[in-house]
Image 1: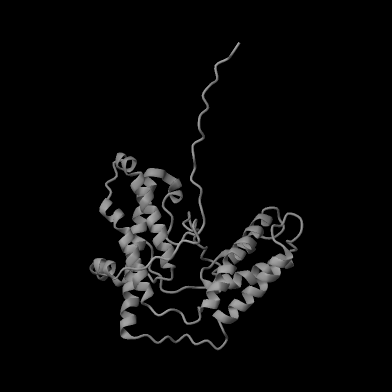
Image 2: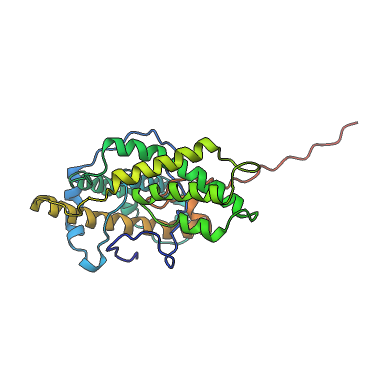
Length: 285
């Protein structure tokens, strides 16, 4: 079971970032789902029964988690006969019910007051920032393999999660490319993209983390109660996805991530496909 999360820290030299194992952002233009109040009531008793020490703080994108959970369920149900053949006893009702649980998380999260720093303008900037960060990071990783920069330096930048981290990474990656002269031959990044990354990251940091920003948040008692319920429902969803991973491990072994993505996975892990065997051609003549 995952350990309870009590805080989010910026890049730690001793805590490596957890890599996602697969994907579900294959359809980035898919519409966001709406949560379900009925689903919340369906899982409220189980959520309230969790021990406080086991409850995880939800710092995740609930819509992404929904799509990933539904994708994992589809993979397991498709392989149900093969999984049953392994002898593993599976609670298929729990597998089939994950969509309702994910909808409960989406609903509860939508009822919690949003971070006032994340405006519509900032969201648009973040949509531009994330693929740009991915491009610069991929380029730096590739060039580090041939000694043009330090792999440890790239790994340091890659650690961390969240909007502030994404903005900081853009600036750090732009500086890395400039200081280590990573443009030119063998580089997939242009000077214009580098300039944009530095400017975008700097602007984002000013908007998300202004010097005078107060950390104080004012919530009503109802919002505080929904916040606590959101975290409990999220914990149930995390536990269910871990259950999915155990089932997938029995069926696909180390390749489980290609079938059951982690809840916040954002990149596509291609499934291995068997190469078709060619039928021998009878000699002629």
